[in-house]
Image (cartoon, rainbow, N blue to C red; front, side, top):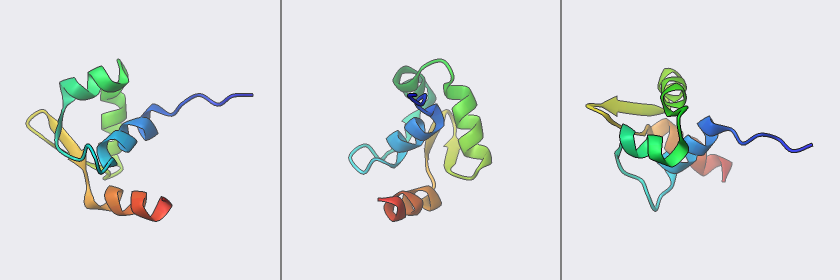
Length: 71
């Protein structure tokens, strides 16, 4: 049985990617992961894994370090 891709994990993966690490506009995120971007962003923000400011999002230091540990 194949598991469904986790959109929250996919979004966080984009935000912590060292080659793409930068503030992303919410419009870019919606184009990148699709229609459920708002729900994913809300969940990641509530978990303390992203920062939000004026329509932009980026990974928190905690998210970056957790990604390094998991690698």
